[in-house]
Length: 87
Image (cartoon, rainbow, N blue to C red; front, side):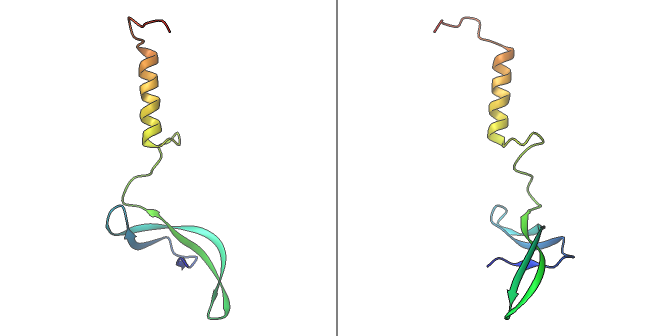
């Protein structure tokens, strides 16, 4: 079972598999009730992504691969080949 954090927790130090060291991670809010020692405890968050390395998407919601492909399409549309064989 994953760790759950209290309502006041914003960040925690946790091992990051990408950075290969302990780094700060965001705590994502969740409205969860956990069972601890036979009783129910209301918890407010679960471990979120590492804050050390950048986001996996840009402002348009594109991954690095999607962004590269879009830029290539835009470049090709702006500069069409001069001697293109008809298809």
